Structures are given as structure tokens and as C-alpha cells.
Amino acid sequence: MAVRAGPRPMVSVVTSVASDLAYLVQTEFRLARAELSEKLSAISSAGLYVGVGAAFALSGLIVVLFDIAHWIAVWGLAYPWALLIVGLVSLALGAVFALAGVNKVRTSELVPERTLEQMREDIAVAREHVG
Picture 1 (tube, rainbow, N blue to C red):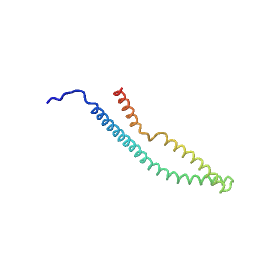
Picture 2: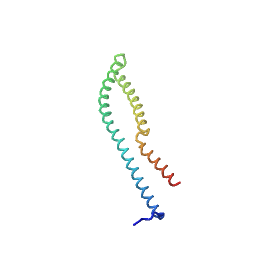
Picture 3: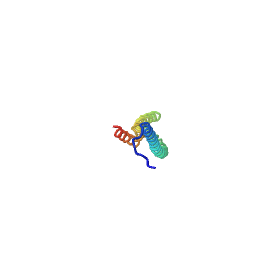
Picture 4: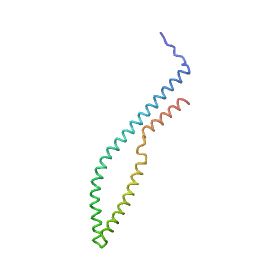
């Protein structure tokens, strides 16, 4: 039997377009989920190394800060005042670096760039076919 290739009914075309659009949206969400998972995995792996390094650096920093306070006391300032000065300077520097780190994380490191680009391309193709 030969199938006649004639114009399809409008309902069939709309159903086909809706089905393709639903599939496209599902695929884009899968891509976004995979990309975010990949980025979060890399960040968590790096976070482990940063945590271990920070623990060792913190212990060394504490020793160095006590030594700085000791040398300030040797130069003539009372030891409690030397500790207070070193502590306040350390807190100020820590706050500056913490804020810089928070600002760096906010600058779209977690934005799924490939997914957004793919969605832009999909929209452009859809506009081409509609227009």
C-alpha cells in the first residue's frame, strides 16, 4: 500500500510541535543538571584540599602570630596589649580575605554556560522555523 504524502492536519502538526518542544525542554534540563553536578563535584573535591591545607596553615599561622606578639612585647609593649594588637590585625585581614572569597564565588562560577548557550541556539532555531 502506498501512503500518500499530503498535507497533515493542523492538530497533528501542533501535537508534533508540542511533543518536540517538551522533549527539547526535558533535554535542556538534563543538560543543566549534568553540568551543575559536574561543577559542584569539582568544587567539592577542591574544597577538601582547601580544608586540609587551611587546617595546616591555621596551625602555622597561630604559632607565627604568637611569635609576633612575643616580639612586640620584647620591644617594650605589655604582652596582653601585644596579643590584642596582633589579634585585631588578624581579624581585619581575615575579614578582608573572606569577603573577597565570597565575592569571587558569586561571580557566576556556578552558572551553566553550556546549557544557556544551547538554549539560546534552540530559541534561534525555533524562531527561524516559525518566522
